[in-house]
Length: 217
Length: 217
Image 1 (cartoon, each protein chain N blue to C red):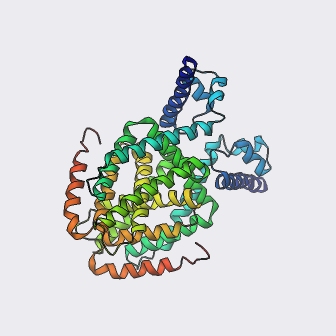
Image 2: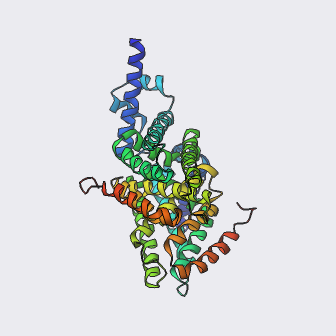
Image 3: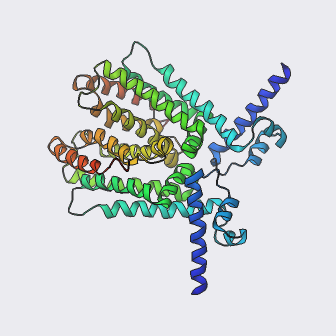
């Protein structure tokens, strides 16, 4: 048991070192040698846990995806309408990405690998599916406009969310992520929800956006 | 002159080989050795033109960004309304990314480097600026709803476009890019343009979408 705990601690140190480097200088510039040096380990110790740099990346994608999905799900309440859960869930995801290094690095790696890494590809599928479930519930709850296609809603919310993460990361090192999510939703809500529900969700969005304090841009 | 032409041809061969590899197996898996082998050149020939793998990537980002921006601009007509130029321009960009290897690889590299590479970061700024100019014209032409914030429109169109490219690349190897752009615009147009103009732009979008023939999904 002691040996297993030590082995797990070593694996953790490798992942944490890689996460720090990826968030500081990006994945392409983070070499295996840099990860080993940062983790203060030997090459052998690293190769015992991971067969390649991509294997480390895959572990980070997997863990980060679980963290992000877990945060989104935990933000939702079964008693709340699905649109509210989606809006609140997106803001919680923004906070998670800003606060959690593994989640942040996993976003960078997802963008880097896209369809070339099976774990990354599967993660995009899972995120899409999660959003599609929320939109289906919103349709059942009568909150979606009758003239919009649910598939188009899922595709647009997913694209605008992932694109906002990308732009925020590229232009502001991820610091304005919540604000970018708020801008997306400000445009998308009127296109998606019914006239009757719009006032309620707009106010809900305004309250969520207000939590974006100037000290934490 | 002969020597300069030969040197230019070598540089071209390096870029084209790197582009092919990046589109086939992704940037992380494309090593400098692979690029040299594919280009049938020596290490010395490559280092004469590029000091590192990232320098090759930077050249591809620069060239691809120019191609994409050039295609978007060439698609616009000064006599056409700005919204029409944006919609048509996005479909032309989708076709360009699907048909032009350098443009496609540059999208992958932009996502990979984001804010870590000055050329990539600047490219995002240029794309944002181009879109902002179109939206400003649309406001002047009275096509934008009076209750929407132009900055939010720019941010959402940019995010949904970049996100669609990312999702299309990850889940369908970029083959459904035009369809994803069409789904975005189907949701975004009613949120952005005035009631009076909506019918016209919806029909314009439908005509553009129809060009998405089933044989070229």
